[in-house]
Amino acid sequence: MTIDVRVEEMREMPISELSIGQSQARTRQVSKNLGDLVASIRATGLLQPIVVCPPEKEGGKYEVLTGQ
Image 1 (cartoon, rainbow, N blue to C red):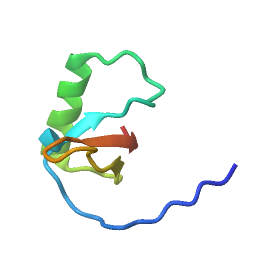
Image 2: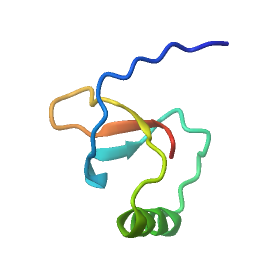
Image 3: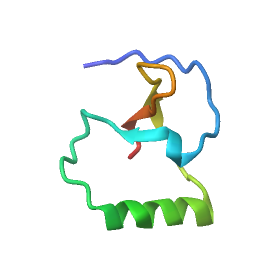
């Protein structure tokens, strides 16, 4: 299966603007692990870009599609 993806924009954004994607294979999220991830990103930055979907409504969060 091939999926065509078009990069419209690449930018930095605050973690607070992101939400976990509904289609993520990981169905259980442990908040301690998420906290560790946030601390790691703050300390060293993000080593690999993530793919997000824009919010459905104004003021909503971007949904993480890949790279979580």
